[in-house]
Length: 455
Image 1 (cartoon, rainbow, N blue to C red):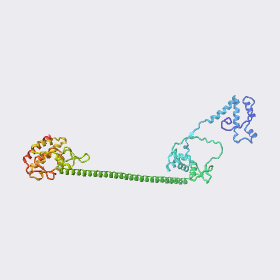
Image 2: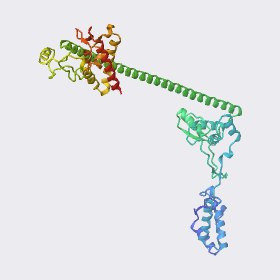
Image 3: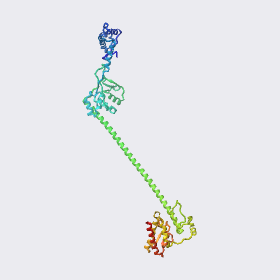
Image 4: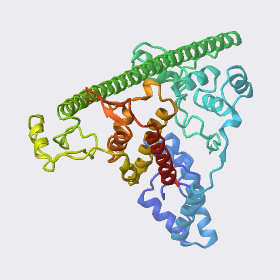
């Protein structure tokens, strides 16, 4: 910094003799005049630089002030340094770059072309201050992340220049020779053509006239409209494709659901079919067992000689007049009967005993149900003694098999009042010589027993 004056100019290096003379002058010796600009140009005219003419004068002023103020050489140098530093550290004034923009151009970009204020200002700042350059820059940078960020202030330009060189007014493509007004146009040209050889140019591109500007605006509007239309058409096609995909997926889901429901119905139908088949087989097996029991009873005079196992049909747990051992089949029935002592035939004198045995079945009301059926059998005969249908009892009937046959004393009571087994062994029939008084007496006792049972 010691080689520069406070004004920022360069100082020519002094010779040893000149430096000695200046020191003597500062110390109070005979003043030695420093070389002036004219003398210096005569001695060193061939080697001096035209830009350093003012430096000796500034140095001469500093040298002249030093003796008069009584300062030393170091103090003088310090003053020079402080002055230079003060000039360097001077606060820089910041200004808003958008103040110098044309309001007409901003209005054109915002009102006529639809750009926001911040984008219009950025376009003019980066587009060489023209509407065309601003639009081209905005088209190239409209997708930037910081396109809508606020514009920062810049240092104020005081208009000073350090040289007389020419200022670049545009850019030129060395490959095709096209002149571009700003960097945005240069980037667009490079993207479109693939050219990469550019240089700065002093040629100022002629600004557009009002007619050309309007035509350019219309062209840009049509370009924006075309791009907008293309984007809308693309979005519409994408929406149509998405809707088609949604409908297709919906139909596929409906088909899948219907197929699953159909398979579930088929499985349920198959299960029901299997259950029906199993139930039918079970009914057939039970019927076969019942038919077997019926034939065995017919062969053994209404008696069962054996009992089915837990895996087979077991209609009830009560057996009548079964041998003590409970073993053997139909072929051994006669032998079992021969071994068994003959029992006395039921008599009317034992009616109370038979009714008492039936009344002893209290579980589930079975005894009451049996007494009710017996009352119906005997009561129908007493009330309608000449009616043939009331004089016969079908032992294969469900009511008889489930509510009379299983209980001891029920059949004996019927035999005691005059019913006898039929020839085929499938029913009971009231004999012609049955005593009506015995029947009436039996009916009174059964009704009394039933009433007592139900209390």
